[in-house]
Length: 151
Image 1 (tube, rainbow, N blue to C red):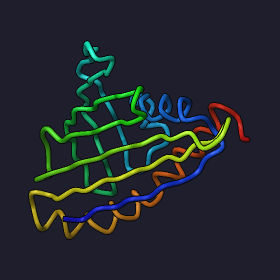
Image 2: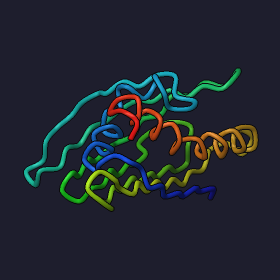
Image 3: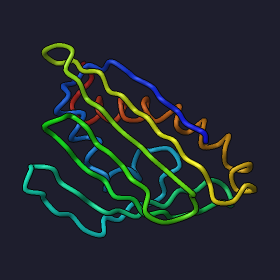
């Protein structure tokens, strides 16, 4: 199963970066391949976590697919966990971590593993997804500089 993992130190607080990644409705503005994102619903859990279900549409040339995920926002742990619910994948798992490294710096961790249901689609889109995931960290860092100011 293809996967990608990276970790980057950024010049923004862990809380700011958590907020940026948690603001999924804005993804179409800056996330590679993301053409649309709609939140179906949100609910707060008794333990302080927030859960949302969202449909994300990814597009590249003639390819366009929408998939549904459950997103668990755990501010206390500094983690965002994404679980696949429905769409063109056999499986999809995504996790973000946010750890303070200084007064206004943090380390952002990003992990994703995925497998398409269709081998043909996997062969067609595998390289494109791999390239897009490599640009994710940069896209979020650039977005943070735009929103919070370049450090």
